[in-house]
Length: 273
Image 1 (cartoon, rainbow, N blue to C red):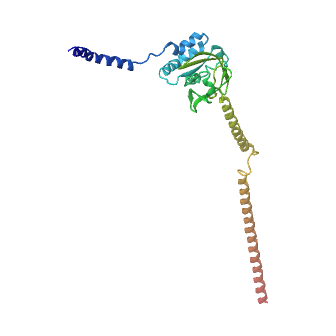
Image 2 (image 1 turned 90 degrees about the vertical axis):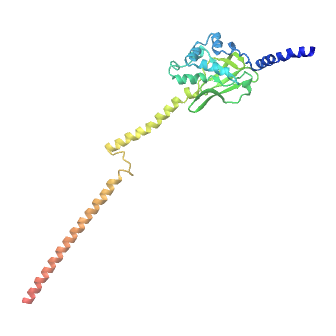
């Protein structure tokens, strides 16, 4: 009877024990909040007001926060300080469209976590989160094995990391003294327009030459329009030759008729004599 008295309470407790164990297994681990907040990190830096304004107006700050919550690879962010933006040409930011501003900000984001030592073994070029019609925008990163110097090259500027603001997985934030300028937005545009102007110039010159040729006749190619008067001249020569031949035939015809008439008169006179 004593054994039955002990077993019965244990059987009654089993459902509660299984429920508690299941809750321990399925309960999500609490995620850190403050250290993953990029906006808070930049605000604590005290010299990123221009960057913060861009991140908020373009909604990129919200997008990156959502990515960090669901990312297995983490993110790396290069943060240009206010002094970096003052180095840009006047009106450079205002000259960008909203989409281009988003591309510029995403060009400062690598889609995985990189520590300073990880950069030493990274394979270039590294893809960023910016993209355009030509595909992903990339950046080249070089790191020294003897120091903590890390340098980014965009094809427009070379930018070293000035300090580490945060480097704890899944987020790394590095301060830079220059804005990373992708070549797709800040390089090649002037050269392309220059090529277009150079290509348009010969066409304009050809049009002007053609107009001058029509007006003055000095620029007309021999193989084109000049061939027509030659053919017309040949036709005129042929007509002249035909006219001369016909005239000769007419003269010859008149001559033979006259000779025949004289011969007939002479024959009649001889008979009559």
